[in-house]
Image (cartoon, rainbow, N blue to C red; front, side, top):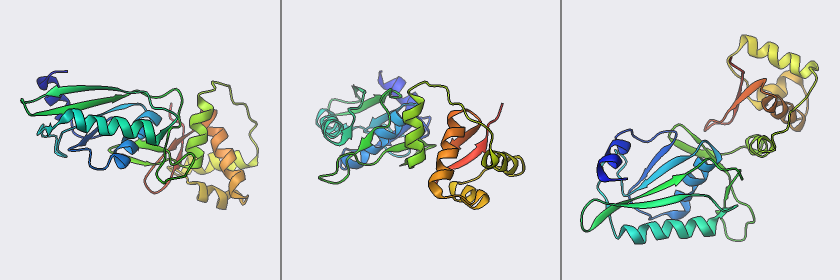
Length: 215
């Protein structure tokens, strides 16, 4: 990638698959963005770019990129697939381009506290990286197994689909109240219906919502 191509990319602005960081001052937080890309549909992180997309560059871009690569190796499990390239803007400043494909080993986790084994999983929602719910993590794992999900329409499923025929979406807590079952039972039903392509799960900063599948 050359500076001209980089400028075209940066002008798109931050979004579902693009994130800007000026420096590697907080690598423990930056890796959350990378994990979110891997757990979603992939993306690109530009290191050395201002929030508004200005290609200001960063001094010692090799060292800055090294800090992020070190954090990737030490804080993310399982190991994250990525590519990194450096683009020189001037003799002293440059930009690091981290390309993160959608992973075949998701969910990936960021170890945010010393001594923790797994950590926290993140997913990308528009221009934000948010914590993945237990339901979202299970769906990611089970989708990779490529197994057909079979189920029968019971009373819970009928109540849910009737509700979604009249409302735009439903949350897990809403569903618990609708069918009056324990939370873990409602969660299992929603996960199964998402995997069977009957409904969609949509992560949001305030929690997942579930919507009728659109054709």
